[in-house]
Length: 115
Length: 114
Image (tube, rainbow over all chains, first blue to last red; front, side, top):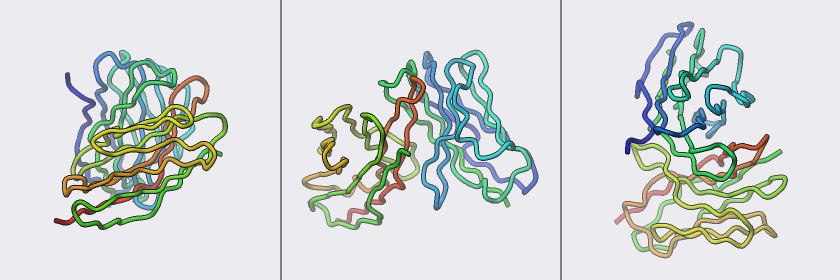
């Protein structure tokens, strides 16, 4: 079946603009995760969804970042008033249940460049 | 807190050479350990995993053993190929609040030359 998909694959935006990044998890996967991969910071956890609720938002770097998930499927990560330090690859992953023992499958990422 | 430290790259090897990429971790409790690989232009893929001490994960000729006494999970391969060129990430999974959370190392880039 299809893997995790993300869109857009690349996004260039101007500082101060808002951006939306989309993630389509593997069908049937109830857990969804956002990570950020940036130079000098490696891979950082941002937020976790179980169904439509987000029990762990501890990794969101500031209140400019928000995420939602609807219908237990698609998730959108929104960055408001983008800054140059937001430039990174944003990765989404999904897993079957979210109880701690299953594998996370990653999408190809969205490469964000803030000018 | 929980963290993963892996050797800095890039690691440059000739084809058929022996590979070791070191990974050590700090964690409370008993985390699961993973190696993920990112080939050029592709997403992260799980390479192998180990869920308890002394477990050995293996896949595609790669191996790593969960060593609790040294808090290590070093990745090894006996004979690398050009197609193994990629970035390798060591990660641990904490069970915080009853669910997954992967904590990654910084990644090690491997370049294999013919």
